[in-house]
Structure formats: structure tokens, C-alpha cells
Length: 137
Image 1 (tube, rainbow, N blue to C red):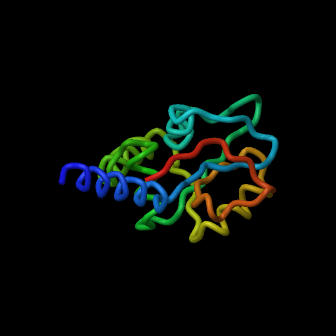
Image 2 (image 1 turned 45 degrees about the horizontal axis):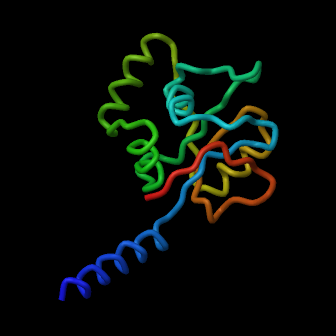
Image 3 (image 1 turned 60 degrees about the vertical axis):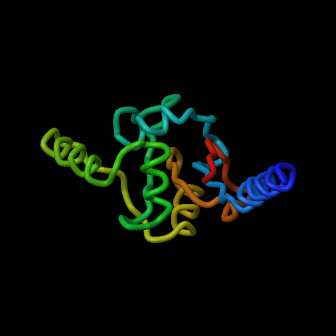
């Protein structure tokens, strides 16, 4: 009985790993690989230049499930905590990252603008972008 239970647990874990979505932070082909800490600093506008290139972080619209996953996984911040952060930054003259409506628009923007970075589902990338960082559910 224990062997059957272990086998079922292993099958469930394997199934979840296979079906887990993978997400990536992307840029155009000229960008360098970034750590999660650097990406967080970029999205909080604490790091704005990398290798003499102005970095332009792109978010998905507020309420998008992938944006929520990004905020939790990479920024490690809740929506309310981010709102507080940007309220304080507003008084210092800093603006939050641009937001776009879809992963396709994020990908198109990133391809065309040097220094732009954004996040999408890994299923949505092609060979015209560079993966800077990836994570999964």
C-alpha cells in the first residue's frame, strides 16, 4: 500500500511539473542576462542604466494574472505594497513602469526599443527576443 501511495504522489508531482507554466523576462538580442535582484531593482526604478543603456521596464496591465505572478515571484510585493511604493515615489518625481495590454504588445515593444524589458509566458517567445530570466509556477 505504501508503494502505491508513493507512486501516486510521484505521478502527481511529475504531472504538476510538466503542466507548470514557465515565464520569462525578455529583451531584444543585445541585452545581457539579469539576476532576479537586478530585475526587481529595474522594475522599482532603483536601477535605470545597465551597460550604458537606459532600461525601460514594461508591465502588463493591472489585474493581469501574469503581472500578479511577476509581482509575487520577482518583486516579492503585494499590490497594496506596490501602490504604497509608487505613491511615495510619485512625490520624488519617479513614475512606475509603462503598462501594456497584452503579452504580444510587450513582446513587440521589447523587440523595437533598445533597453526595454518585459515579461511573458515562455510559450509566447520567438528567436527575435533574448530571455534574461525565467521562472515557473
